[in-house]
Every structure is written in C-alpha cells, then in structure tokens.
Image: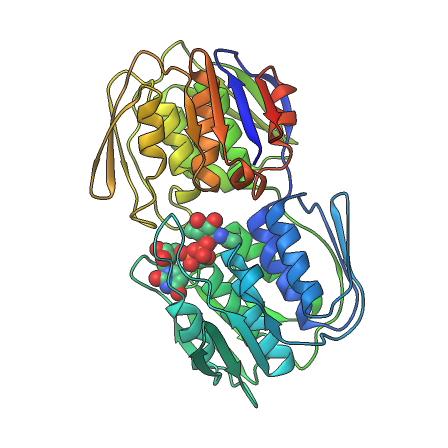
Amino acid sequence: MDKLVVEGGKRLTGEIAISGAKNACLPILAATLLTDEECIIHNVPRLKDVSTMVCILESLGRKVEYEKNTIKISAGKVKACTAAYELVSTMRASIAVLGPLIAKYGEAKVSFPGGCVIGARPIDLHLKGLRALGVDIHIEEGYILASAKKMKGAKIYLGGHFGSSVLATANTLMAAVMAEGETIIEDAACEPELIDLANFLLKMGAQISGMGTPTLKIKGVKKLRGIEYTVIVDRIETGTYMLAAIATGGSLFLKGAKLEHNLALNDKLLESGGIVKERSNGIEVCRSGKKIKPIDITTLTYPGFPTDLQAQMMSLVTICEGISVITEKIYTERFIHVSELNRMGANIVLEGSTAIVKGVKKLSGAPVMASDLRASAALVIAGLIASGKTEISRVYHLDRGYEKIEEKLSAVGASIYRVKE
Ligand code: UD1
C-alpha cells in the first residue's frame, strides 16, 4: 500500500487547477444507463471511484473508454442488470445504478452497500423513493432485487432523520424521468452535484423543474437520448485547497473554482481572517494577517457547511488560538481523524457528535493512518502545517477522490511525495 510523506512548514503559493466533481460524475455515469445511445462526458477526474463506476458499467455489458478526462460510453444495451458485491462494496455510490436500471430495463439486482467507517449509512430513502413509483423491492442474500412492470409518477416526501439525501434523490429522480405521469419529490437534495445530474438528464430529453430547490417536479418521458456533457468542478476539492492555503499562511489561485458552491466555507473563512476573492476564472485565497480566529461549524445539507469538509476544517482550527466547536449533523460518527490529529499534537475532545478543538501552537509530524477519503485530506493539511515529517499510510482512500493530489500540492510549494510499497 502506498504512503504519502509530507514535510511540513511550507507556505503554498501559486495556482491549482480544480478537477471535475467526483460526486457529480458518479451519478451522471449511472444515468448513461438510461439510454442505448452513445454518451460522451468531459471533465471527468481520474480517480479510483470513477474507475469503479466504469467497471460497474462494463460488468453490466456497456463498452466504456476512459481516456484522460473524458469518458465515452458506446451505444448498446446492457447484457445483465446485476451490480455485484465485489464492486458495490468498494464504493457506496454504486447504488446509483439502481434507479436507471429499473427505469430502463424494469429490473435490477444491486448488492446492498452496507456501512462504512463514517457510520451506518442506510438506504431506506432510496428504497422509499423507488417503492413510491411502483417498484417491487426485496432484499435477498445481501442484494436488492427490484422489479417493476410499469412505474407511475407519485408525490414522494424524501426527507430522512438527517435531512435530504443526495443519492436517494438521484436514484428516485433517475427512475422518475421514465415513469408514467408526474412525480413530485419533496425535501429533495439541493446539492450542486444533484443539479448537475438534473441538467444532464434535461439534455438527454428528461422533463424536470425545481432543480436546486427542495421540490423537484418530473414529467416522465418514454425515451432519452445520448449526449455530450461537461461535468461541473469539484467544490470539495476546491474547499480542501482553500483550507490548505489558509492553514499554511499561503496564497492560492484555484483555477476553475466557483465560489457560489462554497458559500458556507467562504463565510467561515472570512469570519476567521481569510481573504477570498472571486475572479472570472477561479478563486483567490489567502490570510489577512498572521493569525486565524477560532471557527465554529455545524455540518448541514447544502447550502450549509458540507460534511465532506468537516475533517479538513478541523485540521485548520487545530492551530487557531482559542476554542473551535465542530458539530457533525450528517454523519454523527464521522470523527476517525480526531485520534490521528491528536497524535500530531492537536488538542481535540469529542462530546457525542461535537468536537471541541483547543488551539495549540503547532502540530508535529508523525506516522498516521488514513481512514476514509476526507479524513485523509485532513491529514494531508495537518502534515502541511506540522513541523517535521508526516507519513500517511493507506493513501488509497485519497486516490478515491483527489486527482493528482501530490502533483498539485508539489507544484505550489509543498514538500509531498508518494512512496510505493
Ligand atoms: C453523498 C456524497 C458524500 C457526502 C454525502 C453527504 C456522493 C457520491 N457522495 O453521499 O460524499 O458525504 O452525500 O453530503 O454524492 N441517509 C438515510 N437514509 C438513506 C440515505 C441517507 O438515513 O436512505 C442519511 C445518511 O446516513 C446521512 C444523510 O442521510 O446521515 C445524508 O446522506 P446522503 O446525502 O444520502 O449521502 P450520499 O448521497 O450517500
């Protein structure tokens, strides 16, 4: 397993080009199952999660070419409607093929994704949305067996214990675009990635309104066409580099980044002494002075502060003078990074789903272990600000979601390299 070695204490300065959004790309790739025609998707990041989705499409019988940042899915029908455990268990977003398979082929067999290190992650809302459209669903031998002779539009309230769900909304939407009549999804997710999926479906010929609001209205159509599409930029990668710039006292221009997708983060950074400027083709980020003030955040669904930036924000506040309070409302157990940050000298105490971070003067490099994608990014930021050497093992987590992270950071002055093992 590869390791990343970070020698801390360097200010990041220069330009980083932001990649396409992983979380937009994955459901969009699943949505290509809704047509037999060719689809070409641009601005696709080169990531392990994307390769996993490509493998799933191939295992279903579609021919896929993944060259540089473009994916071409050739015209053709699927040969099987089964997404196997071996693939689904490595990436939860694989569940996004359920809605399109059932909509297009009337049947699907998709492995139950199970939990993961950030919590239980149920799929009740996915099943609720599909059942409301008339899909018959059983769980057998770890698989979701879904079938529908005919799906009918319905009014569906899709909110759960933790608010709206991004992929449950995606699955229900992708099924509803081909269901007979009108579907209304209430408490739909409003995340930009979901809007991107809806825009992709619109271009394919779907009839959808209300994107970006909690009420989605869909009129079913009989057929969707193949299209060429460019995915939006990744707001979580953007946020991660914004935090890295501020944490190291550096100054970065994030090319292609959109501030409108990171308003919650922007608000907190401005409050604490960051300077964020939107330019026509990106965002500039730096600190206003030497110090950053402590920051309190609560993660929420969009446009609230994203859970996918909680860990990285925690790394930043470990060195802010004073106390920061970070409350996790989406995945209440998503705190695996806390013990690793404490190994590096941070002072973080957990009280249920709240982390109380007492700022320390400095972090010191240590061997640490990556546990999930965003926690790994947090350890990279911690390594960048720590004195000495930080060795991050199990970096395959990072490769799931950050395109060329060590190349991008090295180019702006970080001392970071990969050790192959
Ligand atoms: C997506 C993102 C992930 C991000 C998460 C929350 C993708 C590929 N992944 O994941 O990076 O961390 O949104 O912003 O887009 N829930 C239920 N029942 C369900 C589904 C979800 O209770 O059927 C709960 C979850 O446990 C969680 C909350 O709803 O507490 C939000 O999860 P959800 O939006 O579904 O996350 P994903 O779409 O899986």
